[in-house]
Amino acid sequence: MSEIPSWREEQRLRASIAASCAAGLAEHLPGDWVRCDPHEHLVALRSGQRCLTIRPEQKDPLWRVVITADLPQGYQSHTRLEVEQTSAAADRPADQIARQVERRLLTAAYNAAIAEARTALDAARDRKAVLAATVAELQALVPGTHQYQHDPDGSMRFSGPNYFRGSLRVHYGATEVTIELDSVPIGLARSLAALIGQHLSTNAPAEPEE
Image (tube, rainbow, N blue to C red; front, side, top):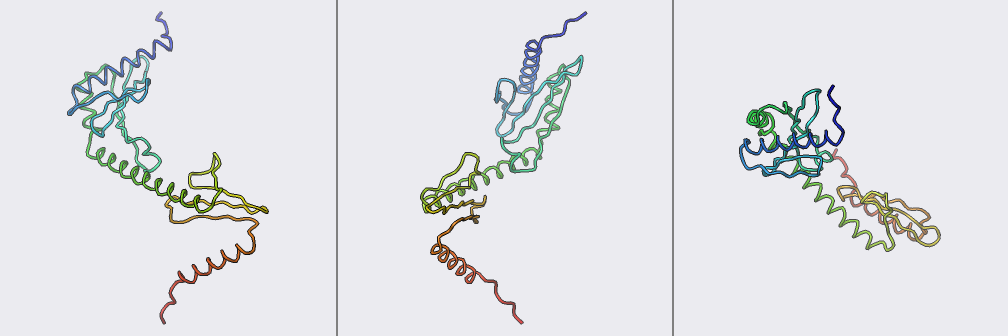
């Protein structure tokens, strides 16, 4: 009767299978592929902007390797892209696994997905920078504004004398701001109302021609 391997033994076997598969792919795939493991429990290869992760899975009594064509970190938050995967028996010859990976994963569609993800991430980074600059500008205009730990990045609050308080939330595109005020002194309220009225008059829609 065979003994059931311990968790530690299974992890060593898993790591050995992933490392062997990575070495085989690096040898047989076109281009230069190097190990770039993101952490100790994951084996990965990179060539330029392409990245493959290798995850062994046990299908009693055999092992398979699941290979994923990864996209740039953070793509899920800014795109609807999904990663592509393929799997093979762990004991399959390395050159055959490499041909399968090249055919199914290293495609023009994968290159296009990487480019789309990069573009979306760059745009998100730029929007975040504009948002931070706008928040800093408003904080300079309203002394004493602050952000609580769980407030969104674009939100800030302030308080003044006689229960006067409020909040500002810069929208993600930094083109609009939601402002909430409470216990506003009447003089300030009149000034704000005048500014709002002036804005509405200046930006009133044109009357349709008859």
